[in-house]
Length: 158
Image (cartoon, rainbow, N blue to C red; front, side, top):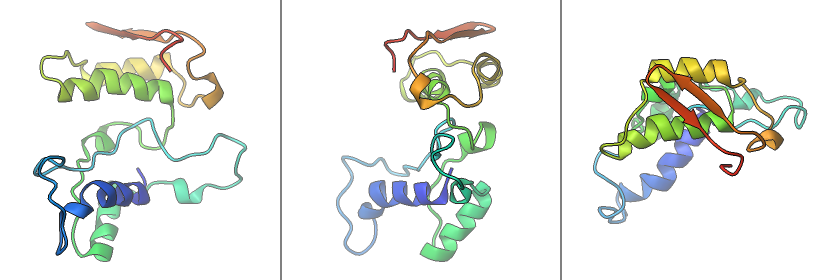
């Protein structure tokens, strides 16, 4: 998760709601809202489109937080739950969709079943490649299972 992505998220979602000329964001931003980096989606061009991407290599979360504090004089509110337990550098849209459906949405929607994170992560890493060409997204049905659960899409789910 890149420092600039965290800065952009904070600047767009939380920055206008604080400071001397703050907007009234009560109806839009929940108190204590945090920026939460997600796995399997990263800033990276498809292979061969650029020669060097050193600026797209993320630093550790603690180092990013330290740098943000040194620039802005305060910490950004970041929920690093997924940053510590999930892949940070990979970009794989099919994995991202599965993560949203089985891990993130159940946290937001009370009563939705949530797949056990470790079992889900192990099964998705076996079932799908680390990287996938963006032209291949949605071309084939995706299906895999873990003890007690399963995930599948059709080619129409892109």
